[in-house]
Length: 474
Image 1: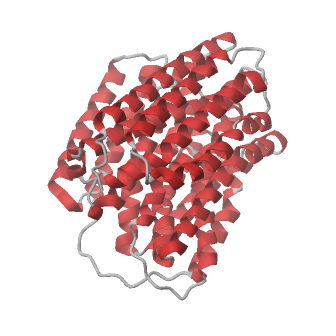
Image 2 (image 1 turned 180 degrees about the horizontal axis):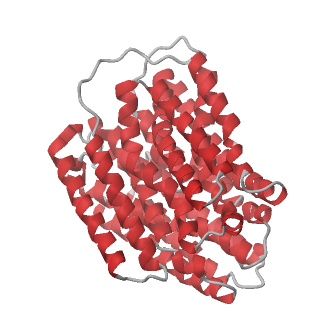
C-alpha cells in the first residue's frame, strides 16, 4: 500500500466507532496515535530504500530480499482483523501498547540481526505488532473524539501519515548512506517509547459492554498459514526453482489452508474475523478485486523503483528516497480535495478512470533506461500515478462503506485494508526475476514488471466498472 492510500482504508474504521465522552487530553492522545501508526507507515516505505544495502551487508539472496518485505506484510495482512477484534475484547489502549511493544522488539532485533534469519524474525515481529497497533490507533480516535472534532482528528492523523511517508524514505536513505541501514530500525524505538508512554498517561478505555464471544484464533491461524504457504510457493515459482514439485506442493497446501479458513469463517458467521456474508454484495466483491489488483501493482512498483534506481542507475539511497517524495505529497494534497467531493460523486466512474490513469503512469516507466534522467524519465510517471491514485482513493473508501449495511461498515473497511496488504504481499512474492537480474537485464525485467502492473491496474478498474452498482437515488 501507499502512504496516504494506505491510510484511507484504515480511516474508515474510526468512522464506525461509537463516540464516547472523555476527560483525557485529546490532543496528546491524537499525538500518541500518530506516533504509533507512524511506526507502521514509515517502516513500510523506508525498508524499500534499504533493500540493496541490506542485501550487500547480510549477503542476502533474491528470495531473502523478497522475504524482508513479506515477513512484515504476511502477519500484518493475516492478523489485522484479529488486532481490531482484540481491541474490542481486551481494551484498545492495552492492545495498542502491546502492538507498539512488539514492534519495538522487532525493530531492535532487526537492528542487531547478525544474519538474514534473525532479520526476518524481527520483521515478522514488526508485522504482528503493526496488525495490533494500526486498527486500535484509529479506534481510540473514535472513542476520544466526537462529531466534527472526530473528523478533524482523523484528517490530522491522515495528513501526518502522508507527511511521515514522504519524509521517511528521504530520511532513511540519508541514514543508510551516512550511518548504515541498521539505523532505520533504531529510529523506531524513541517513537514507540513516546507513543506507549503518552497512551499510558493520557488515555483510558471507555466503559463498554462485556462480550463473551471468543476471538477467531483458528481463523487467524489458518489465514496466516495459507498466506505463508502461497507466498512461499509464488516466491519459489518466480525464482530460479521455477514451477517445480516443491513450488506446486506449497501452493497446493496454501489452497487447502485457504479452503479450511473459509470453512471456519462460514461456521463462525458474525463472530468470524472475515464475515463472508459481505461478499454477497457484488459491489463489495468488485471493490475488493480492484483493491487487490491496484494496491498489489502499486506496492510492486514502489518496491522496485528504488531498487532499480540504486542497483541499475547508481543512485544513492538518499537520491532514491527523494525520487519517491513527489508521490505522497501530490497524493496527500489531491486526495483531500477529492475527499471533499467523494460523497457527491457516483463512485463507479472514478473507480474505473483512476486505475486506468495509474496504469498509464506505470507504462511511462517503460521510458526509464540507462542513463536514467529523473526529471524526464521518473518524475512524469510518479506524478501520473499519484493523480490516478488520488482520483481512486476517496471514492473507494466511500464505496466500500456504502456496499454493506451500517452494522458492518467497520468490518468492511478493515477487510478492505487487509486485502490491500495481501495484494502487496502477493505482488512482492512474484518479483524474484527482477531482484535476480543484473546490469541491462535489470531494466528489461523492470519493464516487464511494470507492464504486468499496468495490466493488473486496468483489469481492476474494469472490474469496478462492471461490478460496482450505481448508487440508489436519494
